[in-house]
Amino acid sequence: MTTRRKTAEDRIPGDLDHDQLIDRFLRVNQAGELGAVRIYQGQMAVLGKRKSAAQPLLKRMTEQEQEHLDTFNRLIGERRTRPTLLSPLWHLAGFALGAGTALLGEKAAMACTVAVEETIDEHYARQAEQLGDDEADLKATIAKFREDELEHRDIGLENGAEQAPAYPVLSAAIKGGCRLAIWLSERV
Image 1 (cartoon, rainbow, N blue to C red):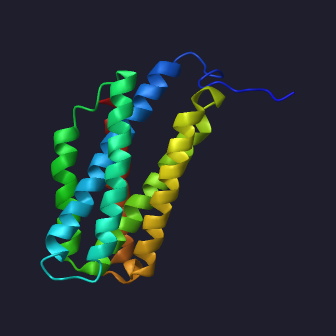
Image 2: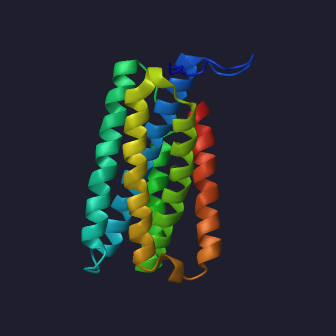
């Protein structure tokens, strides 16, 4: 007989309960996907004017991120979860990050993609570990989106991300910013 694990069943005093945990997951994921859409839109705004070879890749990744955002928008409505109050900031910051890295060149834009997607991969993996059998649909959604994010990371690597000027510094700064945005969006 297989034991079925429930979300938040092994929590200790002070830990989030099931509903609080799911609200946090939906809030931060919706915010993150909004940021991702805006990053790619910022990159396309700059690189599209240069007729970049990366433009079709960016368009495809934007469409996938928009699908993720639409899904989390729907789930937030269905579960009656309050979105983060920081959405207007992520709307602007995402576009600025995308446009700013694209202004540094295609490889810097791809470095941004790799840094963001590696951070989101870790984030989604942690969430999947915390979800029990009672949240199988949400867990499957997160797993599918995680695969898409890893595909985006691979696209960035295949297109010269690691050849961007000051790649280690750029990558570390973007990852740090993403981790801060995740922490804030979960709570605000």
